[in-house]
Length: 210
Image 1: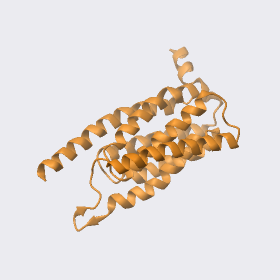
Image 2: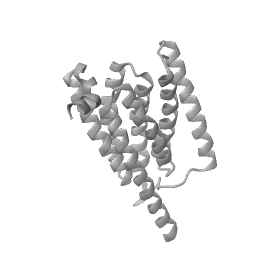
Image 3: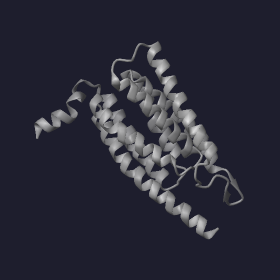
Image 4: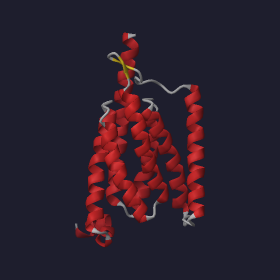
């Protein structure tokens, strides 16, 4: 049992206590944020801003620039999404759950490529490309940038990007030695799957009523 514990959490023996506590707090608020997103609740954004602010600090300290920029972007997009989700005309939401248009799919591809190239430039500038892990970071950055953009616009396809990005990130974070974060993304993958189903059910119900 002790060997399993050492295998999973041994890397944390060299971490500062404050960093471990902060990662656990971010863990809780990240779960809460995705859960609120699944429920189509605007609290997804304030809870998300708390966890992303913590992760920006931790990832900068750990030198994971791509991941840090993802979370910085999440924080900014949370402000935008909070505004978009709360706009109403009377009691009618101005931004209901909808499907992504052809134009938005095209923009998504542009965002994915542009953000991955941007992170590549940052890694090159700071000489941080050390292995294949850096290139995976670039890819997941692009995927998550698109996912956050689509979520802020309340597009159901955002869940597909989250699922794909999370599936890649689970083993990646474990490989990097961040066991808590790896477990976190595993849980987020499950929630994202059910989030897609719940949003689809809501969308189908809305269409039936219309």
